[in-house]
Image (cartoon, rainbow, N blue to C red; front, top):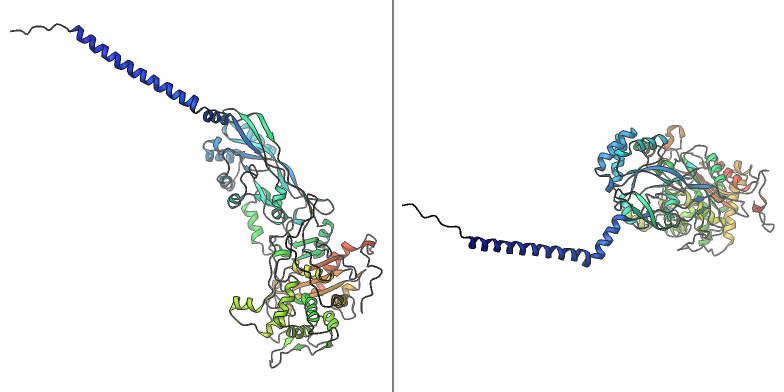
Length: 629
């Protein structure tokens, strides 16, 4: 029997539809409420945040690096300036795949893989977001044209005009003024990130580094409006940077060139001071180098040639060269002996050509093997008599010798604004015990008396010790800066003057030094005879390799670079000192024959006029007494 057909329940369907409509309407209403609540949250509650975020997408703050201060010599000749240059920079955040962009740059400019590696290293340095990073400097016109033609392939890359450090005098002041270079990662962590925003170079050596804070200046900034691609549309606000201060140096370019010419291409150093002021008039270390190579980044090959050169052009011999002072230290030892009272000017020592300690057989040889006979203080300095100073050192003892030499600056940094200076070494009992765990021996005191043994000094320290003799113990630290922003440098920790029990000791030692140049048996009388003024000087020879007991120095059996160093110190005019000079010629062998002529040429360049006569302002005062002869 067939089933009955059920009729459709329209009322039930209508109820179900109404229910679905109510649920759907409720869901829609809920979603609309959620949307309204979200809009309210974003536009009302977070209005300040999003308006600022929107403004930042349109407005950017860009740093304006300050112009680096200039450096001049004492006569106003420019030594370091800023030269316009075009560089290629990249903003990493706008470049997308910046490594691929670097590949395009190398292809377009036909550069090497070495350049590509250097660019990538520069891009990886930590910088502020959206800050352009210079990757290539000193673009040529052809390179600028190639970048312009391929600009569509180089997002985030642009050619920027900027000022780059330039050293017009090149190698003349490389070791004193130094140079700037790119900021590395280690320096970046120590610098003020705000003040160095937009700055890519910093002083690396010399004056450029010591006075970095003054030369750098204060950064400025500008608020700019940009489009979606980051292109600047207009400047909204600008605060100008404060340029760095100019620095005027005490150096004189004419004296610098004269000192370089006097060295004649030999390895060595020359430093000249004004004894009355501590101003460094000339500072030469040869060979030198062109500091411009380091400003925008020196190539690996060029740097290797400088670094690995046997002549060491990067080495600052004036500040970092450590040499036994040899007999140049004898005037200071004489001051120590006279002031301590162990000898008088009339005290005599008999010189048979050697010296022996009591109860010892070892002979400490005088350079003059035949001896000088009976020798007093003045003759000992004039003849550079080793035997006299062996005896004097023995009488002083290591403790007093260390104390007096330290007062002359041996074994400590003496400069005011030369951070690279080595302290040298003035040995003592405590030093040897700490260094070698050994006691101090009397023989070691003897050889210190003639500037040999453990003692090491820089040419700058020898020049300062000479200046102290010239100005009778008044301590003024040597300095390179004459004025910074128009003001002279200030010594924050001045050293005490050398005050002697009898001030006439200075003149007694000066007389002996004058006899070196002008005495009938002076070791440098050939040089002194040609001088138009009186010079107080002292020669020195520093051994490079030791010679066995009883052997005689034979230059033909010694390699050129193992031969003795030649040294000479002096000041002039002797009765009105205006310049003190220390010269060191590596492997020059003879202080009197090689270094003394260099000292005289430097003094002539400073003291003599065009007529070859002593300048009027350098003439000794009328009341000055004639030196003892």
